[in-house]
Amino acid sequence: MEQALEFGKADATSQIGRVLIAEIDAYLKDLYPDSIGLCYRASPEEINTNGIFFLATLDGNAVGCGALKRTKFDEIELKRFYLRPEARGKGLAKKMLAILEAEALAMGFETIFLETGPPQIEAVALYEGAGYERCGPFGGYPDNPLSIFMEKRLVDELSQSNGSAA
Image (cartoon, rainbow, N blue to C red; front, side, top):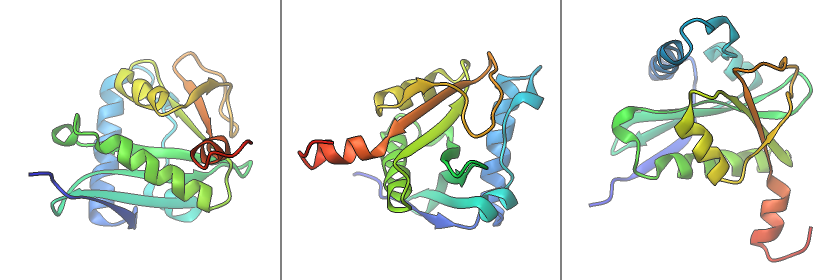
């Protein structure tokens, strides 16, 4: 029986929002133990102030989250995208990513950006498979060998899915 994924807007400062964000931080600390100062985190408060937080539940249990955050240059950035290990490998990340992209487009953004890193092999594969392309630093980030910057033109994808020319 297929499990029911729900992915909707939530408060990043809620107890479960803070728990999931703490799990992301612990995961990143394991991946980047000597470079934790170079991880570009957004606090729950920062997300609520400058963006939108989404909570993923599977049959009523919190399994992940994601956020859209405005940069200081009024771009939209994917942040805090995370699935608990037990929820991975089920296609949920693709569904969550598509919902966040649709939300960014509905907010009036033509392009969505993200920053990840070389140790996050699965994340890079997910993003590339979803049509993200590598780009240079955005949003005021410094160029850094531990960063992979990516972007996706949402308007191009929308016009392709509608069968019209861009």
